[in-house]
Structures are given as C-alpha cells and as structure tokens.
Length: 638
View 1: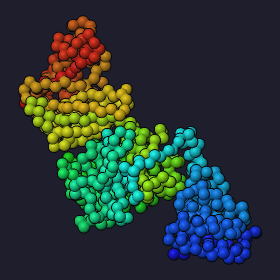
View 2 (view 1 turned 180 degrees about the vertical axis):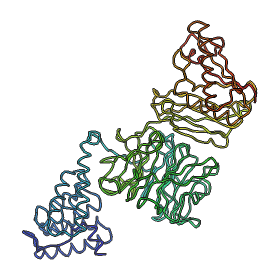
View 3 (view 1 turned 120 degrees about the horizontal axis):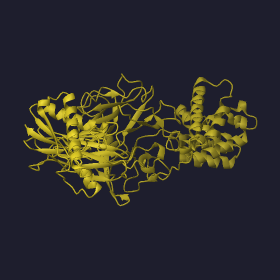
View 4 (view 1 turned 90 degrees about the vertical axis):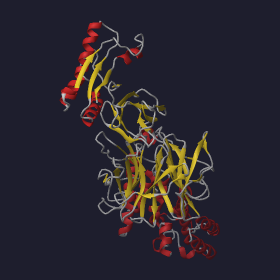
C-alpha cells in the first residue's frame, strides 16, 4: 500500500533532508507531523479531499512544512485540479528550491494539464539535470519531455491556438450520480444510447430521445439486451435498428470480451447474438463501430497477429449475411502500443480512434484518419489540445453535421463519475458534413416492398461511397457526404436497374431526402430512364462520369443473358430538328458501342434516336429541357 501511495502522490511525500538548503524535515512541528500522517492514511484509501483538508491544518500550524505542501499538490494532481496543484507546488518551491528540484517532474505534469507546455518543458528540463537519476525516472522524464515538445510544435498551428473548447454537460436527464460513458448516436441526431455503470459493477444500456434543445429522461433499453452481466462499448446503426456491443465473460463467449449484436423489434431489443468466430477469438475484442451503410464493422482486438497491444480491425458484411475475416488496418494506423475506440463517421470516410503508441500529449490521445478513394486510410492526425490532454481520452462520436461531438469526462460539473458532454469540434478536424436519403424500394406494378442492393457512387471519382442492403420490406437509409455529385443505383434480379443522380455539391448539409424507388420488372416494352448517362455538350462522346451507370447496365445484361434491349436517345427542342435527330441517334449508338466493347453480344442490342419529338417536360424552362435530354432503356425481349 505504501508503494502505491508513493506512485499516487508522484514523489511528493518523500523526505530528502540530505539535499536541503533551508528546509529540514526533522524540525517540523510535531503536531503538524501527526496531522500529516493522518492525511497519508486518508490518501491510502483515495480520500484525497479529506487528506487535503487535514494537510491544510498541518501547514497552518507550520507554514514551512514543505512535504505537506508537496503532498497537497500531489493530492490535487490526483483530483486533476491542476490550478490548485500548481499553486501548492509553487508554495513548496518557495520554501526551498533545491529540495523542490526532485518534484519538478510531477510539477511539470500539472503545468501541462493546464496547457502551460512551455513552463512544463522548463520544469522537466530542470528535473533531468539531477545527478544519478534512476532509469525509471529518466524514462518518465524523457517521455514527458517528448510530449511537451510535441505540444509546443502543435501550438504553432493557428487552428489549434485559436480554438475555444467549451464542453457542455448533457444535464440531469442523461447524467446521474454514477458513470455514463460511450455515447452512440443515430443519423438524425434524435436518439442517444450510452453505457451506464449500475450499482458500481454492472454495465447496462440506456437511451434517450431529443426533446427541443435537450433530452428526455434516459431509461434502460427495453427488450432482452440488458442483463446482470456487463454490456457496454456499443455502436448503434445510423437507422437505429442494430446495436453491436461488447459483452465480457458471457457464458457462450469465446474470449474475455466478445462482440454481440441485437436487433430492434416491436417488443424492444432482441436477445444478443455472438458475432461468431470470424470476429471473436480467445483474445479480447471490444469497441465496435458500424459504418453508416452497415457493411463495415471496425473494432479493437488483442489477437496475437497484431502489431502490439490492441489494434483496430475491419470486417466486411458479405452477400451471404456473414462477416468476413477481419483485416488489420495496418502500420499506418496501428502501432506497438494500444489503438482502440474507433468511430467511423456518417461520411464513411473519417475514422476517429485512440492511441497511446502514436506521438501525443500523454496517455491515450484521439486521432483522425481519412479514407482515400481506394479504401486505405491517411496517416493519423492528432486532434490537438485541449480535445486531447495529458490524461487518457476515450470514445468520441460526432453527429452528421460534422460539428457536434459527444464524449465522456469527469469534469468539475460532473453529476458523479463520468458524465456525457457535448462540444463543438475544431473546424480543421471535423468530418465531412452529410445529408441522408431514405425511402423504400418497391415493385412498380404491385407496390410491394423489395429487399434490394442500393449503391451510392461519387460521379467524379467513381468511388463507391456506400453500398447497402435494404431491410426485408425494402426500407433503406444512406448518408451522403456533401460537396459531391452522386450516382444512385438499385439492383435486384428480375428487375431493370434504377438510377438517379444527386447533384448535391451545392446543397446545404443536415437535409433529409425521402425517395421511394419503384423497380420495373423485366417485361417486354418496360422502360427506364438512365439518369447517370452524360454527354459532352452537342457531342456524342460519353462523359467519363457515365461509366458507373454503363457498368451497371453491363452487369444487368450479363446477369440476364436472354435480355434484348433498345437504347433510345432524346434531346430538347433547341436547334434544328434534323440536327437533334442526328445527335440523339449518335448518343444512343455510343451507349450500344460501349456495351459491345464490354462483352455484350451486339445481336442483343438496338438503338434509335428520336430527337425532340417525344418531350416529357416543358421545353420553355431549363429544368424541363434538362429532363428532355435523356437516354432510355427499353426491353425488346426477355
């Protein structure tokens, strides 16, 4: 216990009279010494507030009692009350600066806790001038020095130096006298699910709904998800239908902690199911984060093939409904230390996570990595002070607007233990703002819902942004990073492809689009407009941004080898009729030529141009003319 106390107080109760110039511990008032000893007994039981009160009585009796001032500073440091800790360290230093030299390391840590990294660097440098420092002290000091130098370099970034960090407690409807942590948020920012520690040992899930600017009273999740075992570290799908979480020491578990899934039903959350031996091992798996399209599952694992400690992996949902073998995110993300708490934002590109193996401010810091066009991630970027501190940071989630973050902390206004807070993200480390589209896929003739594959592609880069499967009744939800134009494709065997273009590069974020998708059964004379086929102005040359749609059409024809089609071309009424007829015919032929070059038998393909003879909208407006300039697929034979 005494060794633990020394670690807690960071050297501050050590007496070294042999080094003293002014201070002599042997000459301290005995009454003050007696109080000091009582304070130490309080500290042994983590009763730091009581210990501080007793020590203040001791220094009132003997103001020159340096060890008492140092112990007050150490206890305030344990409480993360950096201001008071710094103040009392300085009181001790004023008594005897030479005696204080051994305490410059803990003093520097508290200075860093307040973001005073330049002073912290000076303090740790003074500590490192001590002769005959033992090896552990040298390592500890060198580690802190690296952190302070990193912090000072980061502070040169004007985005960091000008940032105002002002977390707001979510209030009594969410937080309680016990700890709340690990927030998870639905795409519409209306539902918040979090972990609460109940009776000081059991972890259960609680949920709350937004009400105006606040939240309704949080309640335990209904159904079969909460138990007398520990459920925690969860991720809710963007549509609020799935909950993937960490269950530790469950009877059917494969290791110490496994990942489980529960589904929302009319009766509440279903009985959890173990995600199986592809995801879970005999090692530790935790901290899941589900991508917005439900196709990628990021999580932390200590499986032995990693780079060291805890690594972040991703597993992909396969067409058969099973999860693939997890892939390690590689040495760009993972280190010999611990990486955990991944959070993939609704933009499906911004990955936030914690690491103590990457250079930071001390402990576990939060980092950001961006997914590139080929699916690999950029080198991580530290989120900077004061989002990161000298302490261990935990899970972070960010709403779809990209600016509102939620996290857990034990700040001064905590209701007890960890509370949930919200704050505004610094602009340069925000994810991409998103919009979202939701609706239902149906049979165009019967109106019946159809489970279908829905794919969203960036038209300019041809990068697939989201690819998901609707639910059993055809309902879907897709998030869209703003600032781009998208091709929206829906495929189902036995039906013609559905395509839609979303020119959203100029649209504002935080918008919801409701789009129901009627699929045309493949029958003779069925038609569908191909809305993502683009041509250069007054040209028959296909635009490069047409390739996504053309490849979908190739796939449709290969999947239905007896299908015969005709491509029809149309124009608006601008220009001469003969020119328009020639242009529309040439454009239809260009599509057929592409299909032929990509393995489709020309005998299955026809084309015809109709010019401006069959308008579907008013040619007196630009919007109408744009609708009339179209390419159409018509079924000739099944």
